[in-house]
Image (cartoon, rainbow, N blue to C red):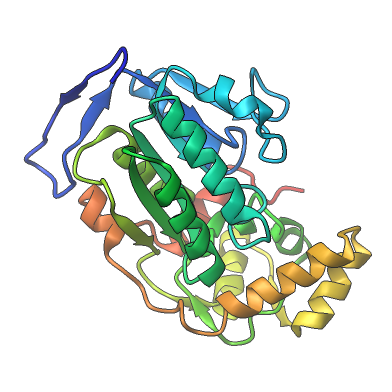
Length: 296
């Protein structure tokens, strides 16, 4: 390492892997996003120096402009990689390879990559990063559908309006709370025993979108109804809200791939890493309602 040692702190009271404290700097890409800002908050609380990278932030970082990547990575020991818009889009594998080469050239020792669970094209991008990152330790965190998509993402307005329009049919999904995801990412960034691991993160149970809407209705105190639509109908709806035709079609196809049932099973990877159970969707909904997520 450069500045830079891990001081190991193993707590025998939980089942988590070795929890360490990194004193070297961590670059968090997309540092103002849903996952990035949570990772920044946790690293800062641990006393780990953080560079929060974003297009308009203090540390310039833009996935569409690699000319600033070296400056953002130089002098760091680790990086959290949250690629925008998605690892399944065309060009993502090339971007991951370029990032890996830059990270290796800058002496980065550890990389944690956020990926999508059950996305074949995302797996190609994962491998591109691994192949280009040289001697850096690479950990992949594959996430289920974010619970916070209902409170901070594209489905927020639907919850507020009482009608969730989405192309999920009757498929069940083990929604993952982003606080759990961020805790796993920070454990992988700062602790030992995660090099080369691929973690598939889910919540503790799977719900259909209709069941999720019922849970959200109970939390908000007003009815929330799930309205299933076809992929093409959803793409058309997105276009009505200003999404480009190409992006709308990509999103509809992506959801069709992800929500065909192959991701419905839960895993115990959150517990394996953190030594505790992941947060249940009903707990997420109650907390989000308490914090005013749906007061609009």
